[in-house]
Amino acid sequence: MAPNTLLLNDGRGNYTKSNEFGTSYSSTRNLKLSDIDSDGDIDILITNHGRENEICLNDGSGNFTECHGFGSRDDPTPDVEVWNMDRDGHKDLILANREAQQDLLWQ
Image 1 (cartoon, rainbow, N blue to C red):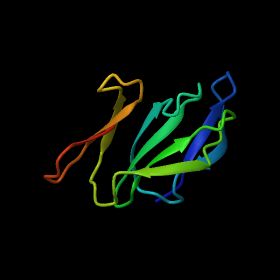
Image 2 (spheres, one colour):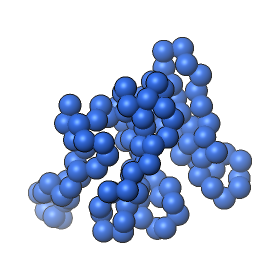
Image 3 (cartoon, rainbow, N blue to C red):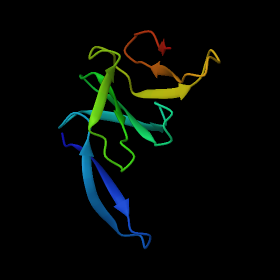
């Protein structure tokens, strides 16, 4: 297992390691990008294997040091989708789970 890492493009196809995000040495299954906190910056949602899933908030400078968990470490979540399902103006999370666990909607 290795940390999640942000690589920045210099505009010429060269990538430079910027910073790490999420739980160090997590078992990341998937990433989803969305402005979760509606501040105009793209945040990162991480689905993990054997660990709680995470939302890492962008501080506006491409740093993702503030992370919050969602779901539980027992949720086998390979993917998550973000959408305002109930049209209340807030983004909801739809978790696609495996291993005979029910899919979940977090509002």
